[in-house]
Image (cartoon, rainbow, N blue to C red; front, top):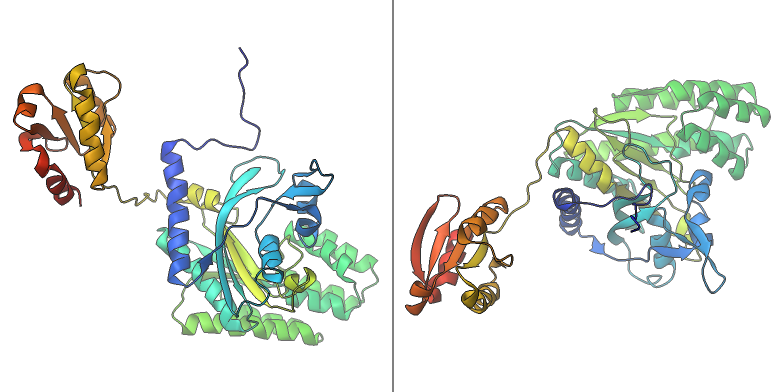
Length: 432
């Protein structure tokens, strides 16, 4: 007999863990509704060219890509933003702005499986499309902060940078976008020395190398101080100064709006995706060194996919990683459990009556199970206890003759005889 093993990097979620995953998804969706984001669903598989366009070299190399039976090169989505940009550039082309869109689902990358990194993983996603103003960036930061708070994290911080600072320096020194992307990929992996070597090999002057060395060391928790230092460091680069000022505006808006969170400003920070044009950020907890949430501004992607020039900013929380972080901080999952009922017939002849009674109770909106294993009443009650059932309804022939059943409160270990017609009203009052 063949034993089939799970594919490497894929996971089965057993009931308790699945409940945690769905809880984070539920909180994410409730937050989307609170901020006025409408849910969309995009396909898991897209044309390879779409997903590869601005995803970054490392992601392109790790996509699940193949030819379908029609000979088209397709891939499983490694992230959401490309699909959403395609949707906005086509079917939502003429939709009034701003567009506030939310989605959730599975993503796929052929990474080396390790703690917090899987080949199939789950994310939610918030995109605010149509505004280039700092208010939009501030709102996305607010959503990120609110999600961390609602999930119950006691300590966390948001690392923030702005790709316009680095790209401004490189662009003004005549370094082309393709080479800039290569440099940003190295910075994303914290390979600063190699990045500097690439810049030097491209013929950049010493002032550029000196500025970059300073920028890579410019980081700290005091946003105003760090950005003041950054502005002084890039005084020879006009577009980099504008990027620093943009980041200052965004952070001032969040603070003025009462959106308070611990920050780590890292001026030389880069993310792997090539489409970012402005603020970038990730959230962390002290117990883990992997990002739980990541996002940023991308103002050119929708235009690249055939749409009108459309600014946009978004954030993608990693559901898997948030669950891991919650376990690290011992945060309980606050799932509201409705009272559950189990119907137990005392003999074979009463099984039909058990099904009839369970149908009536479900019709009244009461979560109801029927004992289906043929157990004795004692063993069935033990099983009900194990399943955290609130009430057991025991159907016996003598009580049934009078239109009654035995109702047992599993928590209090108390029971009484109740008329069947009064059961829904009684249970709804007891389990609400």
